[in-house]
Image (tube, rainbow, N blue to C red; front, side, top):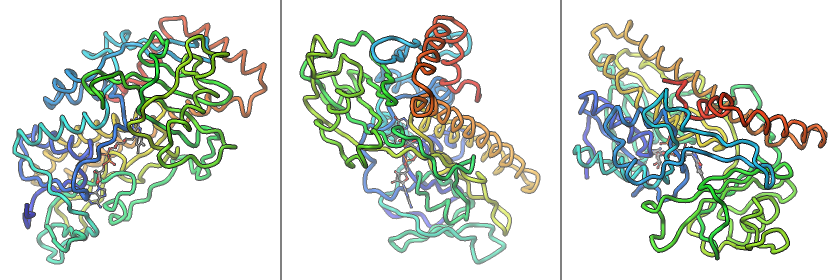
Length: 433
Ligand SMILES: Cc1cc2nc3c(=O)[nH]c(=O)nc-3n(C[C@H](O)[C@H](O)[C@H](O)COP(=O)(O)OP(=O)(O)OC[C@H]3O[C@@H](n4cnc5c(N)ncnc54)[C@H](O)[C@@H]3O)c2cc1C
């Protein structure tokens, strides 16, 4: 498929946030858009497994929610344990006064992307592949107020606006000369055992004896997460598949890029909930990982752009950044993709207002407001994930008996409705909308 020579809006990156941008623009009645991606096909890995309530609201607003709801599971609680005892059960049903979607939607990123791609297809919006952006410069003919975007393959497209949705290593961000740093200047970012996470989509030799579909567990300064895949999104329709996540103790060194079933099981045996242990001395119904469908490691790092938009110095349009191109942080709390999709959906009306405006100076205020709000929300999420990491790694800094007192306080407060509601509200992102 050959690339058009000119467009009004070029979206770089057809991950979840680039596709959400295209859907939001289409919803605003803006059709002169081109979306490109460097890869020949979308990435086929499950990565983000949850979508938060605020993002469900945003997806609903642009008519892209029903198919996701029909595939995903809607657990309304998330249990957090210390060892085998429960600290708190986060109750998303308590969000009912604030949202039509009082749950977290469990759906692998592969399925989320497939639904969005299907929607784009229905609307006649094609993703141009493989087109890897290598340069973004203001057009040489100053009066045009356009950008010239060049691709590794040699093609060039002229565009008024460039939306950089090209992920954590964004070429668009680099071309715009935008810095990407930890907001607290904490470049060392030592989160101890939580500095590295490993993830795997697995089956077990026998069903784990865990009564809930999702469970987070603290143990000896480590954290693990267990979540059951929705039946309709299982990588293997013949059996129940689970996502397991575990932190990697510092003394274990760098985790393999694609950890094996044995590597993951060894971590579950040491730090997972007893119900996932293969050791009969710990687990009355010992089980172990049987099949491994996908695994990866994830390095915890936080960074945010210093600005979300860069105006064309010759007037006209702008370069805008969103999703992982604008902010990254630990996946603890399942926030990254959800926040990025909300960046994207909120940009639609802002771009429409800019396009419709005859006075581009005053309308850049829309970008300023949008950028300031998105940056504030991202900083809040980064702070929240750092707070969670701080709690999870407290055993490295806090005297053990004191830590036990802390857990007892949390267990006590966790019984109260206001506490469950407050935690659910923070995770849901509903404070952002
Ligand atoms: C192993 C792993 C586990 C994760 N787990 C979670 C989780 O549990 N929860 C959670 O919320 N998040 C998780 N994430 C993060 C989540 O996947 C991201 O937040 C989400 O993918 C961001 O979407 P995006 O569209 O901004 O970027 P991406 O999904 O990275 O998409 C960017 C797209 O841009 C394309 N691209 C890149 N460079 C160029 C270029 N120069 N030209 C053209 N196209 C380009 C890429 O091919 C890609 O398709 C995980 C990520 C990883 C890697």
